[in-house]
Image (tube, rainbow, N blue to C red; front, side):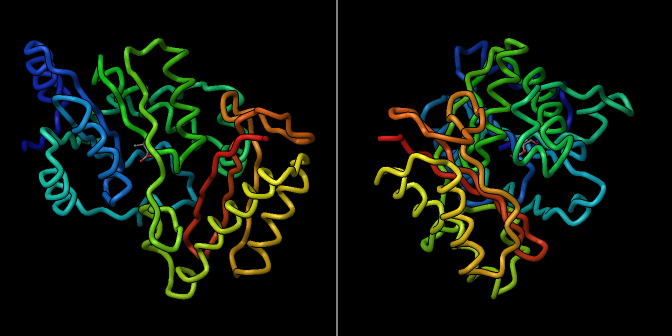
Length: 285
Ligand code: PAF
């Protein structure tokens, strides 16, 4: 496996592989690779002849008060992980390669990026959309793998592809969890022992919520209250939001839930320095 830093070298490699008729699987990341990322890589390796990974910690998706400077970096370990999982090329561009202009123009992605996580982290999804658009422009025809753990990000990326008509197929992969239900995230390293013991409450509360829907709960207010109460009563986490959305359109469902609809329940909660998000899908009976 090779590691390249320039767009030109990356594109030369991709063009060569395409000229051999090989399909490209692309896994964009910000490094600090864990089993969630390797599940995306493994899915790509299973489905595509060539798998490439990018590592770029995108400054545009962090606000001034967020953890950009402390974001976990582990390039050597990440290279070993990629090699072990049969990645063919690792693209680790410099900031200049991704954003040749000092102030890149931000992508507009509309309402999907403004609610829930977008409300708590204004401009976050614009930053994500801007880097993903740039990466898709560079990579070209491919399939790109994203985790459902960041469900709202996945919806933003789908919207971005639609708006730009990028020749990129988005492949959504299921959330990978630890044995006690905690969703894998690069941010879990910030949890103290006590917070780590508390954090699985998120998935527990989501599962209870999904079960109540399956048992007939039709009011999203009740559903949100049930989930919030579990998190507040069973942990020291500082709950930010519980949201209920239509899985296809990402519109928030504030009142009665319609039978047959696929919904997603999303949650965000701060455990000290770690802001954790999670979600679960359920069909209204
Ligand atoms: O999910 C991530 O790691 C990032 O948001 C992404 C998609 C690589 C864009 O920087």
